[in-house]
Amino acid sequence: MTETAVRNDELWPLLRRHTQARIGLGRAGSALPTRHRLGLQAAHAAARDAVHSPFAPDTVTAGLQGMPTVRVRSAAGDRLTYLQRPDLGRRLDPVDRAHLPAGDWDVVFVVADGLSSRAVHEHAAALVRATTARLPDWRTAPVILAEQARVALGDDIASAMGTPTVVVLIGERPGMSAADSLGAYLTHRPVPGVTTDADRNCLSNIRPPLGLTYEAAAGKLAGLMRRGRELGRTGVELKDESDHGEMLDRIL
Image 1 (cartoon, rainbow, N blue to C red):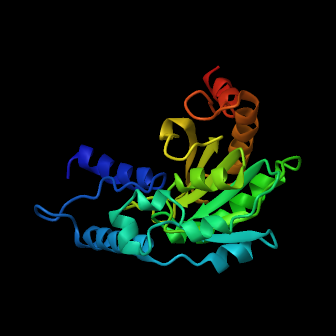
Image 2 (image 1 turned 45 degrees about the horizontal axis):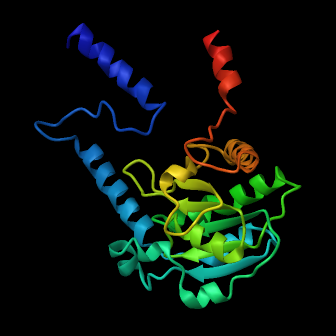
């Protein structure tokens, strides 16, 4: 064994401690070693399970510890339709729209199953609580629990409720390293069918301890919400500057 090979054998285990990425897996002939091939198959199965597992609103409601909730569905009537027709996942079921409450609120949180109900079940309630705790002066609408939902369903909900700011907490598309990643999408004064992704701010990979923690995500999200309301807009013109001081300290 060469000196380079010895150094590589020592290097890859050290690097793998700091990432979930599959690096330095080695080979068995022309293929991956068996243990890594089995690991990939297990990760793929977990991703498929996350996409197809049903949404359990009661799980989220229990984690919200008494916060009022309202359940809605998108126009996608089942999971297969949801996956095949993204456009229907962006529109409210007409019957559920008629039952949405109206009030003088500043923000509505929408907890949406998206492509990983597991992420929502594990992380959404804690993030709602951590964020609202940082905004005691904001009037928060009942939390909307949305089934078969895409991000843009929040536009329809906020418009129907007359709420200027909407935060959609949604299960992100599972990857081969993470099947429980939660995303938070902030939009100020959305217009259904007109608002685009460029008008939103996104926090991704919320999944402690391997991703963004609830406290860190809530701090960033609350800061963006306040600044977005001051500017009267969100999206590409609204930047998260919460880490700038820390980054400058590291550079200098």
